[in-house]
Image (cartoon, rainbow, N blue to C red; front, side, top):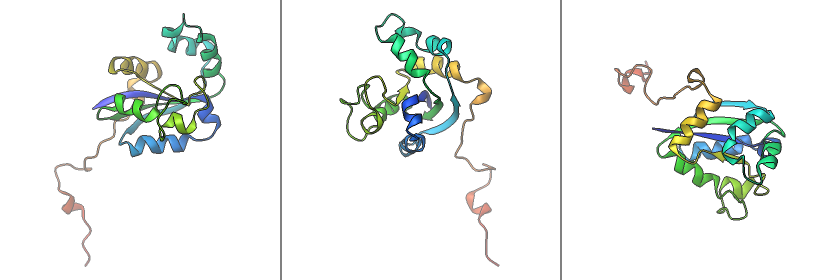
Length: 158
């Protein structure tokens, strides 16, 4: 089972569309196993986006990511890194396929609503950046007592 980091960015939080984005995650079969709202300061945003430090948009990226609260979450599921990137859509919302998060909710290349890890390796690094091991609550689909069958828990009428 794979895990990925997902961020709902300040523009989407400000639009109050968190629930709509979470619904898309759940409809895709992802399990949200950790989640929190935080407000990044410049140092923390800079550390997270250090790979972009030499790019022309770095300053604007930090300004945007510190402009308001974000929601960070860990998603779990089969092939979740790739599937999450598919439902996010192209980085540029104007080029994103219809029905993707960015096509439906993003304003521009800069304010593009969401972030997702681009590889399993980066997912591990990004998850550790925001969450400790005690913050992640894996969900199971098993019964309370897996040694018993479902029928043993069914209520029978008298």
